[in-house]
Image (cartoon, rainbow, N blue to C red; front, side, top):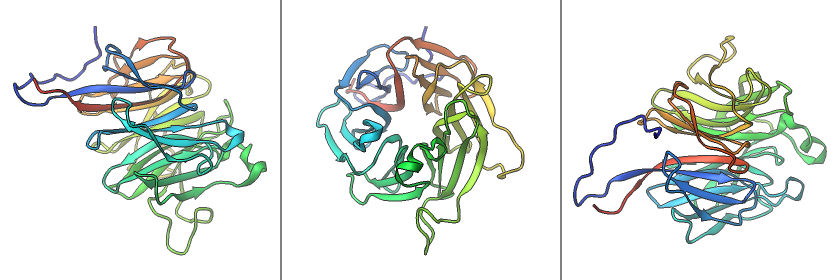
Length: 314
């Protein structure tokens, strides 16, 4: 049985059809796996990654991008790019530019990559070729603040329609002080990444919010949250159009993860994919129903991305 919730059209002879593919990062093995959405047809397309964490797919250009966290106290994180089959691998953000890059977001309209830098305590972006690196938010600086987990930026996504970025600051393990924040997509004129005044705390007192995914059609933000049950080790969602600070609570839609991290949405297919450090890959409907783990004990898994890839001609 497969977790294909949306009906797929019949192939048209002589025409390239699109086939769903999952790209899953194996943190412990330093590898990138490509597979069908039910876990079949699985292959390793990239090896020898330096603690990979976040991944995105640029179908039009035929590229995958991923972050390598590196060793947190060595400031040796990086961002790489390769073709969809793992060939033509190259470093676009070299070591020393970003400290511990985590979740990665592709904003195709403006040709930008956004990512969170955990021990660097920053939200950053760059062009798709790695040029023009910018720091949009800086929550702390120096060795003293680097050990304060409330300042660690982890997950990131972009609302291009409203011109805003969202990011998570997870807090220490099981502390219940995690936050999701948002600000303008650009630093306001006359301000900088440290002093900008447009930052809003969208949610606070969360267990440990990690990765974010935004459904722009419904304007619903989804995120994984680690920490203690019942609110931790979950997938949550909330409308980004709800007013800030009005006492609304997120909707918990998936529970019983084993240190959940990655999340990817297939909105037309009404499904999500989630990974956890326990080595499982899950699928579920966007409302959290029909949850099923179709891979187990696959090492420590981190980021996941879903894309519709053109197949060979029929």
